[in-house]
Length: 551
Image 1 (cartoon, rainbow, N blue to C red):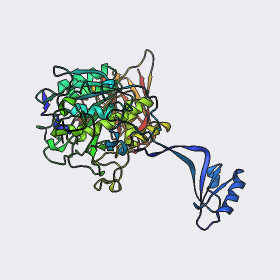
Image 2 (image 1 turned 180 degrees about the vertical axis):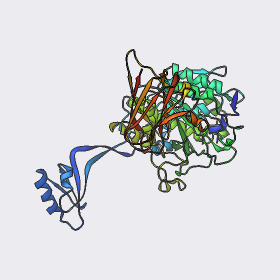
Image 3 (image 1 turned 90 degrees about the horizontal axis):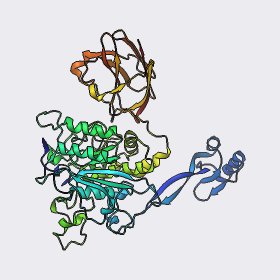
């Protein structure tokens, strides 16, 4: 079944100083306006036993010593760790200066030179790629068409997306892709008539996972309209393919969609598959920092924003040859009219996919939910001061958590990491739940996982009970903010279906740092334990689940 009329649904329309860790043990001390810097310096020397340098003209001091003790001294206005800065890596590719989005996303600001990154396979499910492009050939690990013929891109969309992610950096040719360690898996899913079938997309996802993809970029989608089921293009086949990828440790990134293919602009619902569980949905930002009207909004499924206007990238050379007078052959200034210049959420999404590849290149052991949390929670909040006058403080429907900041996400790897959840996807009852088996003679199972109001609201586990079996469950979350525990009967099809709330047997009635429920089974079957995040929190919530079955 074809759900999309054409690929255009989602996309037709300098070295900087960066922080590095503080100088060990060294501090800067601010002197109060009415205090004598030399008198304060003498007091600081007595406390620390170290020589103090008066920073002339700055009304501040520099010293080695315990910062907490210094804050209590008379005449001290503030104390901070001493920080040094370094120049960020700047690619030497001749057209990199035209990629304004490199600076906007702080693409290379975490490094003063490109580090050795673990290779990360990134799948581009799109219109194919220019298989002979010199900026892309070294990065292509595999390519396959799911619509017949070769994976050669005859439209340009996929080549733009692939170049943003994986164009060879530091090769003195063209542009610099945002993911230096990326190896591209190219899956062509666009038919000659411009249509894209869910079947082709699902096959492409499985193919990419089987070939070791750690990140999948999907810059295409189908209309979502919860208010009109007749035009809503939800596909269970697509959701199952996404779940397969997540189950195999893949970060799935998708564009939230462009309103030029929606009933009105701006459209307030993200497209599929961005609007599916565990998919990182990406909206677009203009060069001014504003949220353009073409970028779909969504209060839940729009997770982060990235530049989606005037995006400079690679383009099939056979198509740019139609404009021989154009100097940048093989690049978007010479693209066909539809993509000159490229704009759309299609071209914002691959910047986020590249960020995921960079993070995994530094820390390959991370799970998808950890990578997603690092990207989201380290985004730069979009607001009036950043150019988005309609963006509200904090997470909003226009830009999600804010503008992509690749350097901040990478530097956050030096801090405590987001919690893991090895049981995903387990978002509903039935076959979507994670079955908990008890080994011979064992009475208890223990689960450590996490939940997130925005990305993973429900975790569901199935437990097999016989009549008269006694079940005791305890939930200990890392935060007492709105995590509840429920038990559902074996006949339950969905724990989110309000029409079947009568199938819920127990609900923990004391939300807090420990929740408990107990039940004696009245029938045999797989009962469903639901852990739900009921309110927004700044970070994902880790929890420990203890399940005891007595026969």
